Image (cartoon, rainbow, N blue to C red; front, side, top):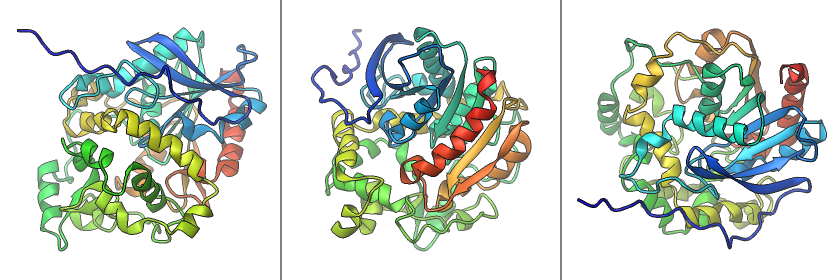
Length: 389
């Protein structure tokens, strides 16, 4: 029986150059754990500099670090920001829903990152991760502290590896879904929606178009949306989770474009959005129009299907023992979407934890919304740990 090969990743040969700040270049690195990885780089003039590696989240790209990279390079760092597996101009990954899902496991994503560093001759680095890049950065520091000498987590706390024996108290995914469905109005969890077969098509074919969909999505999760007034949730149950906005706990019958459409900002608000002007948003919308969203969605599926649970449990009880810090926006619900995770990170998961820093005037996209404040925090942390790399 002949198997149909996976569709080739979108060709990048004829793509227009990205609108990058001065001093930031775009390059490709071949042979990275089966990928041709697209990387943004700053401070490349002197490769012997200490390195800092920036890992993006969903639905973002290496481009998300465009306002961070120049400041770090000016402070004497070599700065690397790749399009991770499933994203942007990196190619070689399987785009099919029914394709090579195990390739998107965290430990294989860690292997991607290590292969990139090896290809570029980097022996040690500080690693910084935002959103879904945050748990990836955490796994980097937990599994290979000899390589990842310090870590900054942003917007998504990391409470440690899963226990060998599941802790009591939290409902199963099926029970939680049933409880959310019983609410009035009925709701559903976004991660299970993202894990479904229709999510990629829903977003690629959003009735309002990808550009308008992403504008509403980014706005809805930012400090620009006045409804983002997060607080700590008491427990992991449907009633508590439903206190979060509908981009996390969605209307039961809505897809994500429909969930965020009522919060589309006005033309005047869009014109005033200095942190994500239309030209910058066009980078995201054009890249996702070309690649689709399934690559990023596979990361969610690895979590909700449990295919990576057993290997992660191998590290049960292990802590992050390199210097660690957490940054997020004051208007970011992401820090509370897993009740208790922020506290577990600070008190147990990181043994050399240097604090939670919440940035005023920022929601979930903290390094894009308030880059000056984020840069100041990063530069202070990097200065303290420069000798480690």
